[in-house]
Image (cartoon, rainbow, N blue to C red; front, side, top):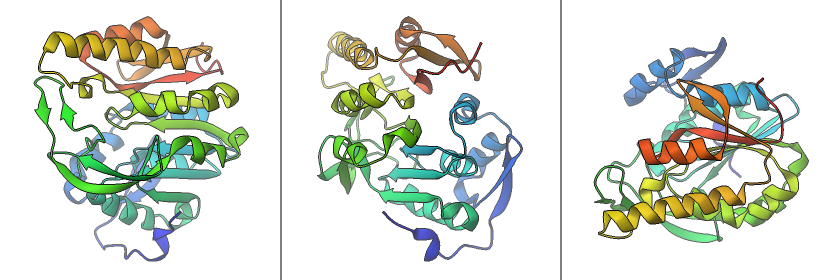
Length: 279
């Protein structure tokens, strides 16, 4: 675990932003457009809605794929403890600065430099634009046209099973996972822990990153079959909520698969929970 807020020098060009009436401080830098969208409620409003509904003062919130800290800092205003994983070195540097700019929140945040995966060790991280939100353990990006991503870093990987087994899972109210295709390996790896403890999950699905073949037909089949298998790992959850028009709506497995077919992904996430959070 790392406590970067104690050592990071906060630059002078930080500014407060307000998310759903809650103020945090950030360094806009090259991400001013992103922070503007967040503040105006135009960046994944359903993600913040899920945090509002599922995180409280007794909660541990886990953010796997924290990027530059929007969801980390917002959840820290609500949770007892936040655990954040971020492997991209460029995003990590910005994340540290933003955590340091919020000293009252920083004491709640355990920042882990690296990714959550299926083994303990070192793994390659790929992205043709390091520092953006698309860094992945998967080298092939196939959203519209299959593109080979370049390796730009070797990162520390923490075994997800071992990590979760070391936590008091009764306190984990929400795990957010946005890891650009890595979910297809990680979720099956931790499925039995999820089944036993049933923390609520907020998952972004990236089937387009599963594109190992030159054949579009083969890739489409693999993407949908692996998506179905992944959803089977989560079949013990009673409720599934999916983003639609910026809000979570009560829906199920079929809508997720339909969105994958139609849009190639479920970007703003699906929420799996055993709590009825919407009427």
